[in-house]
Length: 408
Image 1: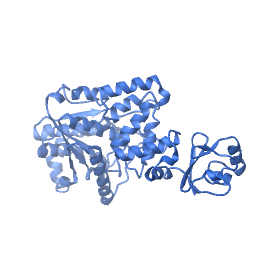
Image 2: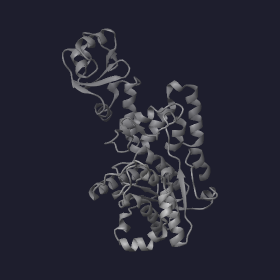
Image 3: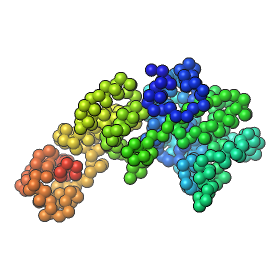
């Protein structure tokens, strides 16, 4: 499939300055994607654009990934209702290192270059920047930006000169990369359209050249209307210290039926024929959740590696009763121990259940035991089944969805 058609089919086509999208099929662009290291991890919102980057690279376009050490010191104000808390240079540097590692994992089998805009901004003198580049940016253009209007409206929080200037700084990134690396296309999410256009205009006025932007729509949860990846607990991160591999896997496993095909197109590299065949099987038996399971396997493999994806898949299968807990290897057990309550075995099974948080009292625990609601390693527990606990870790289960690890 041609790239222009691939992007449209997968849901990666929104606004573009290209008059003919088929230009992506005829010409080879040098493009860049910019990431603001204001956090120590990418989110699955960033991941959507990263997957689009993969398709550009695989179609033969050359990729430059900009991790903005300079812009990260300010933070993108777009979409923010108040000033960001500034991070120290040391924090931004640590964030850059983590995000660079994540990009290397996401594009592990592809060619790309990572650059950092602090490398050129640290050499620029303020007066020279205003004279040589600020002169070419109209205040009307900057004031018309939606985030500026929102921040300057009645009862709004206002905006600092630093955040107001963010789009000029990002625009200069595009110009610099155009002049030094021949970059002539920026790809981004829909929320970065205005900042990207600032670069196109700066290139046109300063370098007298043509450059373009390709943007993808933000991924939205159809069920809630909210930006995809936001949960009650916060964003879904690629950093396993912020969102564990297990939690990451479970997030994809639990997406709704109506949206799962869209997410397969955006977040996996399965082709059109593979996704069509998968959805036929899924729609024949939605209860089996084949589409969600495939999505979870694929995305976790891309982000955390195939070995981690396989381990967390087996750990999840234990909780759904598809394999026995005692079949897990140590790495898979450790995944569950990080997510579930872990307690030491006691002579009184009811006391174990209470300490594990699966009952509020021994009386309630005994009622659960007597009603057959308690199992140990897949076997139903009774009042005198203490010997069900094997040496080492054991899986205690109450009902369908309550678990704990019991150490003996």
